[in-house]
Length: 312
Length: 241
Image (cartoon, rainbow over all chains, first blue to last red; front, side, top):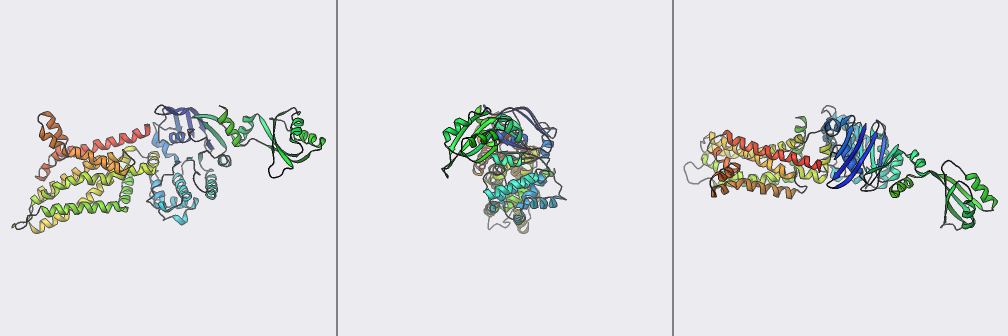
């Protein structure tokens, strides 16, 4: 549905994005992840046809974004990071105008707008001026204009930035509900958001694609290792020495629990395909220590993200 | 065409929803009323003649230097400031359709304000028997003059996200264009002709005499077209930046 081939974008002499290529299939939900200034927004602005790439090929729904721009743009619903709204219009008239601009028919525009207002739960604000709405509701109006024409591709740039936590949860739920019908590309620097909504993640770092895979694959692939967390009562130093004797263990770290001085929390990194929890428990029992908790944890998206963006 | 009409009607609605419309419109009508009154010579047997038309319409052309940029200043500056330009430029609408839609909106606003001054024409026809030829040609001239100044205003609006800056840039360009003929009068030879031909005012005189010269019509229409073309170029440069 979206295909980028060797896309590079310069702002003057500054390369914002260098030589990135990726493909998003129909119906996929993909998160574009990266620190601020990594090139997320630039990439989205190129996909939506706001600005052309300096070099490379970019197509949306089979249409080249530069030479067949109008056809490509017809397929896209876009919410820029700044949530642009005509603040002197009412919610209804704004969504109606954006719908007509995207090629909807005057005849059925009313039912379309009503439908979108219902999806985004804006019924109570139908005739309110946009300037009177809170940030969270503005965000919903922004999403409404992106989906009014039922686009095949939905591009959302940082859709939950700057709104309060309750509204973040609601907005995320709204995006999740939308994802069934559209190919969705979402950018964020908030990791839980991406892991809760998206199936696949593209990690972009300093203008390059650093990783592209499903969250599950990434966490096992990335690491080459697994993590185990354990709360143990006993002398931390001797526990570490004993645990390090196990073959598959790569490293053991401990932190003394502040709330309860009884036990310490150990983080144990192991080789990827080995579960050594039973061995650990044997050692603990043999040494007469107390085992409170023993848990295997995969690498979180945070870990992966940090690893990718700092190791290079 | 559909997109142009859509943008035009949205811009007209937005314009008349703001107090700016009534301040600018009121100012315009107030000043033309003043011009109209000062052009009446009291005590004469025929107090209102068609020379009155020239009398109040000629200074009205100068009003456009300020009036047109005030109408057009928000057209692109506001979009840029709100960020909605990004939505507009990613919608399936061509750049020239956006520019034309906005420009047409400003012409509708200008012509509708100008129509209000037809009240003076009614007064003239009640109190005297004017020659409608020069009167109507003067109105045609002034509409063309306005159309050209709006083109400049739209262009100025595309240059900045600050409405005040846009208005000032528009006014400066229009001042230069209007008074080039005074500069032309000071020198002679080919440069003088060039200055005269470019000047906005130089082409207006004939209309008030009842002369409709196709060259003058072409001049005003092409001035507008040139600046609208520049506007499209600016929009596209914005994309490639």
